[in-house]
Amino acid sequence: MLTKRIIPCLDIKDGRTVKGVNFVELRDAGDPVELAKIYSDEGADELVFLDITATVDKRKTLAELVTKVAKAINIPFTVGGGISTVEDVKVLLNAGADKISINSSAVKNPGVIDEMAAEFGSQCIVVAIDTRDVDGRDYVHTHGGRKPTLLQTQAWAQEVCDRGAGEILLTSMDHDGTKAGFSNELLAEISSALSIPVIASGGAGSMAHFRDVFTFGKADAALAASIFHFKEIGIPDLKSYLGNEGISVRK
Amino acid sequence: MKTAVIKYNSGNVQSVLYALERLGVDAELTDDPEKILSADKVIFPGQGEASSAMRYLKARKLDQLIKEIKQPFLGVCLGLQLLCEHSEENDTECLGIFPVKVKKFIPENTQEFKVPHVGWNELENLSDNPILKDLPANPFVYYVHSYFAELSEMTIAQTHYIHDFSAMLHLDNYYAIQAHPEKSGEVGEKLLSNFLSI
Image (tube, rainbow over all chains, first blue to last red; front, side, top):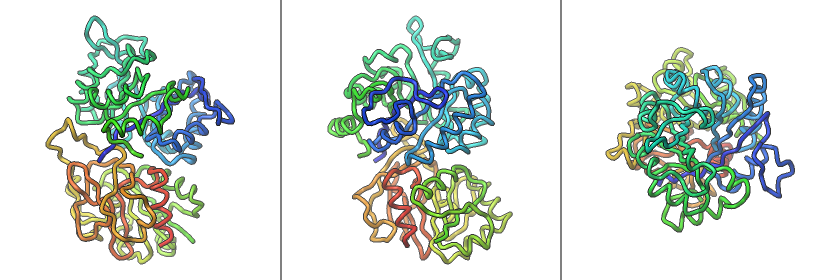
């Protein structure tokens, strides 16, 4: 049976992890490769690396990091942050990334989704959508969720699917950082409407939240950062909990 | 031991090379017929679209070369599909090593079954075969694909997604796996090292 995926997310700046991590076994707390290896050994199903490096000249550092990660780990990983052209994608896939994720650049120029999917195949194109509730309706936000757009989230999700995205990474900015649970209602609505997998992000605080996002939220995968980095939830514990709750996970 | 990885217009070859590097294997990415024919093991990776891959192979006569290979040969993902007889992906005549048809996943219920089939799923009904030696029961492997090979007498492991399909095939010196062993954790590494010990 196809399992639900658990995906830790690592924020990267200038080739180093930025969010504080609380792993005693890490020799170098800022080394993304070492952290990636630990998550992979613990049973993470995939990893996401989100590059928040601001400057273009530092992008080379990202490609070098991708190669180091690809050499070190034996599970799939996605790289996102600042990717806007087919050439950007080519560099990262050639460096060894399995998938890339695009966000603001897709909103600015939706045709780039079609171009990337045609060039590299849908399976490696993840479109990340940051959404926020505005007066009871869901709208896409860009620039780390700060900038509202006029795009309705559900309509945009359908459009990126039609344009050839392979997966959607949906982050609820209203839930992100709250540790109060995922945005299950919106996730279920979008996941049910689309023919491609949906990765849920934003709001993970307890193991029950993961159960709920897979049942009520109909998510295919769930992503979280700080609760894994600070060891509030261990991946082996989470997987055995989900297994006991009747959710199919890889052991 | 020399391992040749066939170079053609396929994506994700780098991951296969890195996986072989982790296993300490001397592998070379090449489309040179001499190097391929003289290698001890040949790996045919794959990611992409069937008809353009077949066109590329034919233009370089790699299609004939693959049929002549006598060494242990492993097709991965699209590599498995290309070793079959025919693919529904753009109605493509494939290499025909395995007399098996490749079909598209068409879910009756799109809410329950997304296409592509992405993620970790189990290998079931494992045959007694050297490539499957010493694996845990129903091991998990990582999949990304929209087309699948039907079950056949050559199926040595199957997976269920919408239908039961051929997760792995074997005939003579030809082996094939639909999942990505290079991305399937320890199970994937075991499958690759089993193949390399055949």
